[in-house]
Length: 349
Image 1 (cartoon, rainbow, N blue to C red):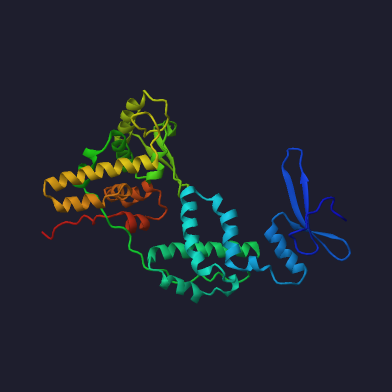
Image 2: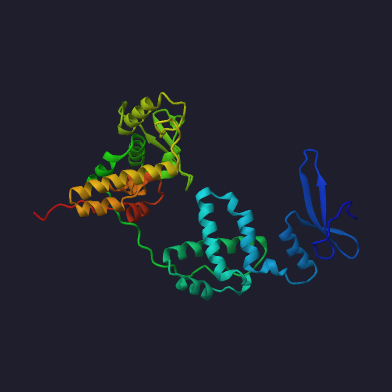
C-alpha cells in the first residue's frame, strides 16, 4: 500500500504522512509506518504520539524533544491550556514560565520526588510554589496519558508549603466608608456580591434572563456549580429581590441585559470594576486620614472586593446555609477559609 501523497522531509525513516482535503475544505492528516513488507501501520493523527509509536516499532528510544520537559511543556501549552477557563489559562502560563527555569532541559524520567522537593524549598514565593507544583503534577499525568513516560508521578506525596488562608474581615464601618464613596454601579456590584455570596467574576456576568420563577440562577465559572438563589420569601420580595428590582428600574433606559452596567449602559468589566473600586477606596482612605483615624485608614487600604464573599459567609449564622450559598460541597471549606468572625458565645454569668 503506497500513499498517494506524502510529506517525508521532517519525518523519521518509514514514517509517512497522508494528507487529504475533504469536501468541506478541511484538511485531514494522518501518519503511517511502512514496515519492510510494505504494510501500512496507522500511527494516528497526532504527530508527537505518532513519533512515539514509530520509536516503539523501530525499537528505538523516543525522540529527544519528546523526552525532555521542554517538548512536554510546549505540547501542554498547545493542546491542554486552551481548553481551560481564561483565568486558569493565564495562571498556568505564568506557572509554566517559572517551571521552565528549573526543568526546561530535564528528561522527564530523570525527575524524582526529591527534585520536586528541592524546587519547593528553593522557591521564595511559597504559595506560588504550591500552585506551580500542582500544575506540574497535572502535566506529568497528561504526559503519562500521552505515553511519554511510564513512571509514577513524582509530585505525588511531596509535602506542600504551609498556607495561611486570608483572614481579613470587612466590618460594617469599613464597608460603609467605601460604599459611601462608590459610584452607583459599584454599589450595585457590592450589594449583589454580598447578597449572593458569589465570586466577583460570577457577579459581573449575572443577567436579567438569569431570573427564573422567583430565583436568580447561577452557574459558578470556577466549579460549574449550579445554584438557585431565592428572590422571594413568603410571596414577598426579599432583600435580593428588592435589589434586583431597583437595578432593573435604573437600567430600564439601557438595552444591555446584564444586571451591573455603567451609567452609559455598558456591561461592567473586571477592569471597570477594579478602577471604580480603587477610586472609591482611595477617597474613603482620604476621609479617614482627615478624621485622623489611622486604624480605619489601614483597614480600608486592606479591603479588597473579593473580601465581600467571605463577609457574606461570616454573617450568615447557619454554617450549612453559608456553605450552600457559596456553592461548597463541604462545610469545612466554608468554616476554615470563609468564616472570618468568631463563634457567638454567651458570657459566664
